[in-house]
Image (cartoon, rainbow, N blue to C red; front, top):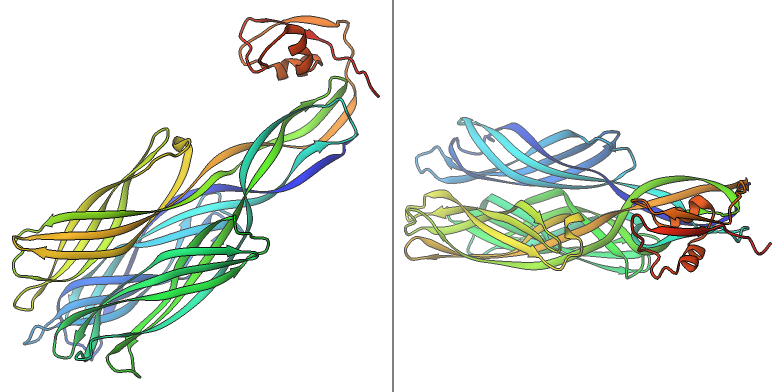
Length: 512
């Protein structure tokens, strides 16, 4: 006879796989007829755009491009600095064991390096190193048994647990347009370099809706018609809404931003300005903290009970933490003379993550690529590294915590000092997403197969063995924990010792 039960639905979230893949993207570019021949390249910058992601069985496919700007020295009598722009397209497949169609993914792409090789005066070879971090999650609906009806003599062992259950997920595309003004005396000739990042990310959750707010921080280096190199910076609001049923204000939300398309060009309408068009994909996963009183085991002293049981893993103690890390360091640069600092590319890296009982320590460095101009208007680049350490304290069970650290560069300032040193002022926003895994015992199809076989004893003496609990002893002999505690005068039912002699009374049913 199958017993009537009271059940509750739970969306179980489990990380299936984490994989970091390094992709090598290569291609050639022919210099347009309107540009002079290339003598050598000075620096190359790029922005990764992901057009399409496809989750397949055992793999993920990425389609995108790297919007590339190349600053080079022209092979002419004046040796002028010039710039060209191209798109380096790619389509890559990453093998992910355990990955299946329909799973939830979080993919972060980062351009670790990009360099050019002059093949001849009219042709360039481009090679980019793309770091892709993939996290795959399964979201499975399960039913958990809360109560059992029809039988009053069933003994139930429960555990109070807090889990993070998926409420829902959604995504949207945000289109942003902006016209950036440059100095009125500048007649813009061409764009030499571009950097863009999504920063100042924030959300506001209301009933059934998520407001996502961020800014696209853009730095553009351009060349004027009178051969001067200038910089302009801007911040473009990136604001959108995602509709997800049943979300409420106290839910936890994971947000992932991804640049899908980028257009930067001279503004044909307004003089002394640059036109920017940006498409950003935003994906949200919303979780609720759910308290469950889960049945771990059960038996009846009078009836033979059988049930199916499986063990599953899910998320718990999910937290999102944002913290400002300020870097104030002096950088010594060899043979730095009367040079002007035009721009600095910044790439923060986490090199090592160490965990102890209640804290996590991140050791990393900031890679700097400095673009300089000397008194003869010659352009060169220098590199430097700044080590840093970031500590997250007061973490419960840090050793068993899974973490995802994302670093945003929200402010940077560099000052050249006399004597060949540079004072760096860098503000990093450290975004830590953490959670732990917990195992759940899920029971199903509980049924009674008649009365237990009767025994000829009313009380037995039992000697405690290693691993025994009063629950297991009571279940084996058809007794109850309460009766064993009462007969033996046990003060704490969770404290029994190996070799201890315990009297186990037989359970007597007193009601119908």
